[in-house]
Image (cartoon, rainbow, N blue to C red; front, side):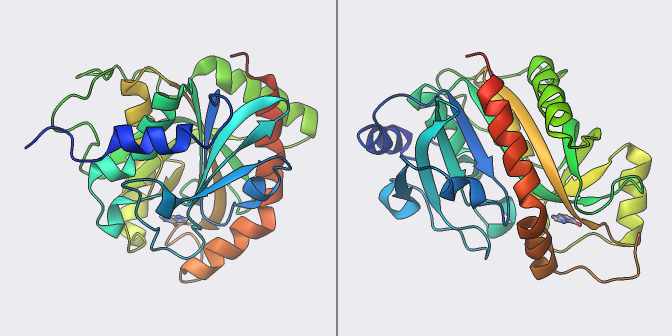
Length: 274
Ligand code: HPA
């Protein structure tokens, strides 16, 4: 393998010249959750085509742009539309936005996703505070040469920052949002799981299942960034309900209930002590 093929320095430079100050927090929005990106009054919007190396997302519900703005007085860079392994991208493309955000000065990464509930206690429409994960994607964004500033063997005993989780609980309590906590299992996709796979995941300790987030969390930890992550539960996983799964319903649920998550994210952004 050669050293880095993704033009990270160019991507950082291209975004840097468009934004007035360094972002403190980098936020990744999951499927159907671009509401937050539209909410910036003073936002600078940068389509992915204008960032060297960024492909256009191939999945509907994942508009591709970065938005810089202030949320609760804090400079934030937001990614609307993300890259997934199931699209066939190289690992370095999937985590390029996190590495770019670190290059721009962000110290905290807030990840959101749409997920299916593996636990019967998580109803569609609820928000899950991810307190741990299981990587079942059978790959890591860190395989290959070690990039400058990253650790070869990052500790993952607390991938989701305990003090950020405390802030999230406080925000949820103040907003009257119930915030169950649990384990997110990341699978490659793009087919949804079988009922047997969901029973397997349940037995393994997963509460929710999805096809993203874990690569970004791993790259962020390797860079020493703090991570907080939420799942918006869009559906019951396979076998837990009679209904077959489809992406449009996942998107619809994301749009219908994403407002709560947006409020929660805004509130957490206001509390982060950077
Ligand atoms: N499985 C995997 N990924 C998902 C699901 C699911 O049920 N819902 C939303 N993303």
